[in-house]
Structure formats: C-alpha cells, structure tokens
Image 1: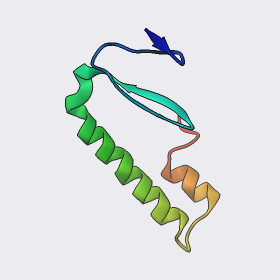
Image 2: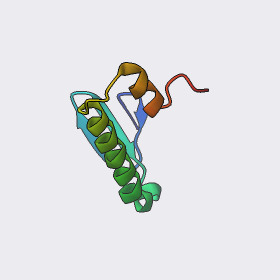
Image 3: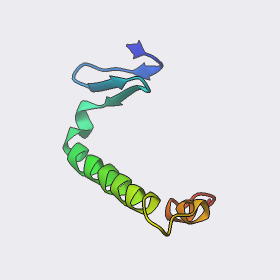
Image 4: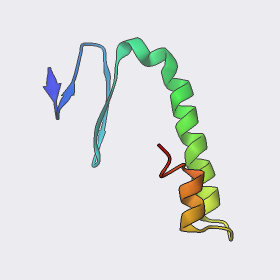
Length: 69
C-alpha cells in the first residue's frame, strides 16, 4: 500500500505531522531506540552551539559537515 508516496506494510509504525509522514518498518524496530538517541544528541549539540556566543553560520556548517561530499 502507498501513503503519501511511502510504501506501508502490515506492522509498520507510522508517524505523521505537518511535515509529512515517516515509516518505520517492523523489521527495524529493534534499532529505533538507538536511532532516536542519535537524533536527540545531534539536536542537543546543534541547539547548544546555536545558542552559544561562539555561533556563526560558517561554524554551524562545519559542525554539521555541510559542503563535504
């Protein structure tokens, strides 16, 4: 089944909000806690830098490795 361009299978976890939907396949549920932790840690790091006195856009680009192949 397709929903908003995403293939959905029985047992998949769906999360939807104003930005769209995300599908988490049943087979990858055991890796979900670690993936969520990594996203949260990255967001905390980003926000700490953005709110710091050292913040620059170029510094943020380096922090996020933008522009690297």
